[in-house]
Image 1 (cartoon, helix red, strand yellow):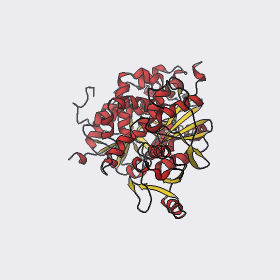
Image 2 (spheres, helix red, strand yellow; image 1 turned 90 degrees about the vertical axis):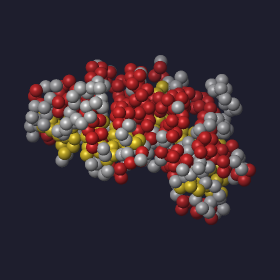
Image 3 (cartoon, chains in turn brown, yellow; image 1 turned 120 degrees about the vertical axis):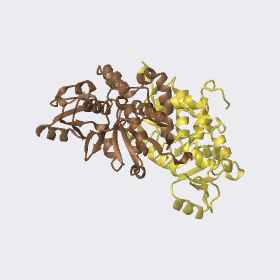
Image 4 (cartoon, helix red, strand yellow; image 1 turned 180 degrees about the vertical axis):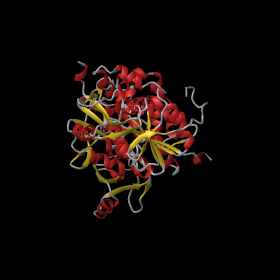
Length: 252
Length: 252
């Protein structure tokens, strides 16, 4: 029976999450440029846990207590902290075994808006195949939450959500129209990625600040096959052995 | 200078309207299945004004005062009123010169959420060419507000928003990523309309109630070239002479 399949839904903004769907769904928080990508990098480089912080005030308080802190505002690193939000900044042995505090306006908001879900995972192109493998293995309802930019929907998060829907559609049923919209966009974008990026608002914001290498890196698939999830208000690594190695053509 | 062009933005849900953009924008409220389509039909059949009502309680109050009332809930007409929400119901001489009260959960919410805009227009495939002509003539910033279904984004409103963006893109700049997403979807959908509809959640809701003819009619372009707009809490007809007859291949 086709209807017995679990549902995959997309929330194109945290404002569009339906609370009643949360408690029976696994959430994937998506903030491609650059928070969730950088989180995958940090875990791949051995960070033990990440505390997502919403305000700079929180960041200063953590900094005073001796934590490593990453903070940016409007795509610019905030002075006085250890890292900005560039994925390359986290490619350092300094992180090994440490707890990192990370301020990401939109990503953190998305995580808090998703509380109540069965589980909250971090997703990006960087960990796409592993993420898909895990979601297929768990076989629960899924909500892909795009962080966006304040109240705006953004194209890179939507494209990634579409990529995940596309990969999972043989095993799940589409649970809302946004899932179909995202998938259609992904199929268009896969052919004409540069066109879409040229027209993306946040992309321009990054390009103006000479961050093309960041953007390129954040769009690359399976660069950091790790699976961060939220446990007691901190992100930690999930230990998970891939089940469906044949599902994707790439790595592990 | 390309930047001197006015902006066209899309809000895929009333929850995503940015208040600060409203006061310098014309809003188009979109609820393809079926509220804004039926409004165009009613005006084309001579209704003088439409009062959008949000609750059934309001509707009963108006009915007692002797108004003609159209009310539906979950795609079913509510007993005791004069009309449901089917476009065919409004094709009657009974409406000529009358004021109609129309209860549309999502459409009405979208109208109220758009208050503060320069002007609030009603848009649907039914009045697409005239709407585009007028928006081009006015040359103000535009926000296309998709009513959606409660907190869900829906595909038919998004496709229509994309169609408007597509038609206007030579004259406006894309003001947010949602505008680009909607346009990409429209281009996909134009080729594979039936595929998209088969997968639409609201479409299924209507099909289950034998409303295929309604759906087909609501997707037809330029069936009712009228331009309703909000004036003092009522929708009335804008008298407007098309300026760019060459813009679209169709009618007037």
